[in-house]
Amino acid sequence: MDVDSILGAIFNFDNYGELLVLVQNSIWAGAILGLLGGLVGTFVMKRDLAFAVHGISELSFAGAAFALLVGADVVFGSLIGSVAAALLLGVMGVRARDKNSIIGVIMPFGLGLGILFLSLYQGRAANKFGLLTGQIVSVDTVQLQALAGTAVVIMLVLLAIWRPLNFASVDPDLAEARGVPVRTLAVVFMIVLGVSVALSIQVVGALLVLALLITPAAAALRVTSSPVAAVVLSVVFAVSATVGGILLALGGRIPISPYVTTLSFLIYVVCRVIGSVRSARGMNGRVLTASRKP
Image 1 (tube, rainbow, N blue to C red):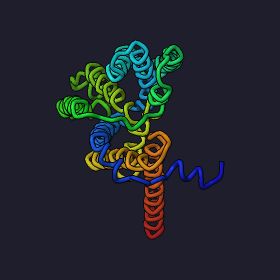
Image 2 (image 1 turned 45 degrees about the vertical axis):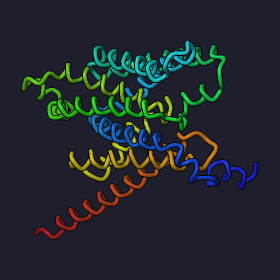
Image 3 (image 1 turned 135 degrees about the vertical axis):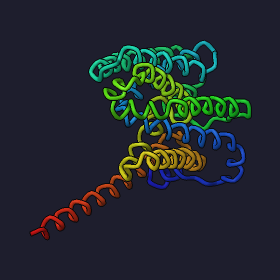
Image 4 (image 1 turned 180 degrees about the horizontal axis):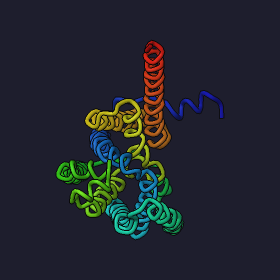
């Protein structure tokens, strides 16, 4: 396969305007998921749950694959798998060592179940592939409204627990000493995370959900130490990667996930470079100041 053929598969903007009209709901869905991923991802980074996201996504994939096999709603199956994994981690994984060991058990189990269900499924191969790597689906108005409603509920829950959750994420021991229900907050947030993972799988697939829930927040924390600015930048980065990935994927013949993950990764690289430059300048400034002191 020559270079022109490869580029033609990645970027092909013939009839782009006609295709764009057909995926308006998908673009809105991507924007909603980006907003949700940016908000939730900030706490994922603060609570060191990047590995947990991957573990939850594996059981979410298993639930979606089972729903596909039996002819049920894939999103509902994904949601059941995600929430089950999130509750298990929230209840059992109090300490970091316990949490990591549980995730290490859940990941291969969930992935194995998902592969088993997909191997038994006799329908379209595109449906199987989409669960793993994402796809631009035709999101109708009812599905978009359901997605938006679920996202609003999640954001309201986050708003209600924002301050105590932030306190418990930064210093859980002190928060518990002050009477903050740290364990309850952990379970509630894990449920929020599980639902967010299930919704995000619709766009980027089970294997690449980290691009929405981890990378944007990690990039934001590279360029700012302000809690408010970090949340805002995380949302901007997540929405840009998701919507931008959908717009680029319209002009190609490959799944949406490579576009979303590449944009997300490039944003992270740029933010990391900016953060490194700022750190170097700050270090040089401190050295110069120290050298001038008598």
